[in-house]
Length: 334
Image 1: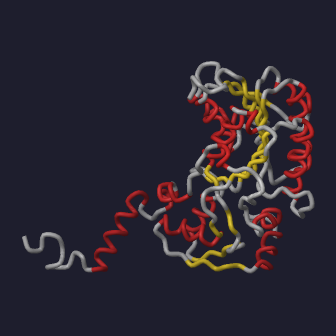
Image 2: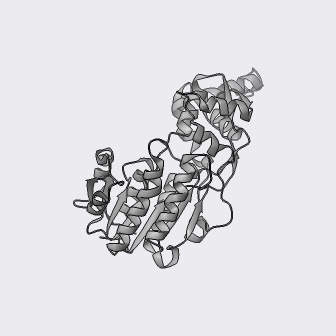
Image 3: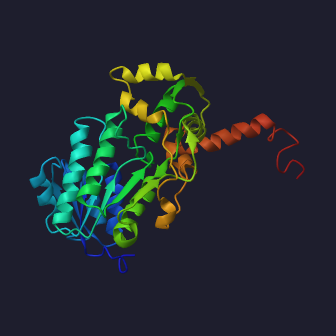
């Protein structure tokens, strides 16, 4: 891959590269031989990437994307640009609405070969959720500043160390009865490695992928209830799940200190699935991987007996069926 990729030896500035998705994106680009500049308010959070890079392949820049001079400095000398910045708190209009336009404009002025902007499924300028409004404004400003930018709209991104599966995993581990908010909401969870691959492929071929919107969803649609049930099953735990009415869910999300904000509840209700109106993984030549490939392994840490939990469960099932009773087990007649 390194010897054939157009990204080999090219410098790519990754804004927000110290975040969760940034770790996966960096690995995908480093494997292609690209040189990376991780631009972030806290670039030290990405220092764990250093063992994956060759000498001189990885650099870090402290950057405030709300300031044009800071963005320009982080982009100086770069060949490509990727914007991964997203947030649920703070001035979302500025961070996700205005700042992407600044990045796009400066990318155009500096002759950047290709730009990828990561948004999210469901941007909506008229939404009551500041997050959806910010994403919509960001896309609009990116298209104005760099018309040939590729816009990626992933569904909820999952991975081994994410804050989604692991949050539910911890709750299911501790509580015998759990409420499920938006139990019928459909999510098309997408694997972080697949999102990273999509970004790399788009950068490699801007003539094909530039100027397009890609909605990135996994191969299956699961309801929130099904996701909780699958996590419990992967842990080997029997749990009771209570479907919560929308009214109670909204009231809960409006309370301070809860794990779900009002914006997150507003975004959850309609679900997060591809609309069919834009390009998808198919046009990128990528086959997205399902949650089921990874869930059993990742939930091992939450099982009662860790990696030995499943073997204990199987022994109990055999005993319940009487498989080891005298005269019925293997070798009874030997």
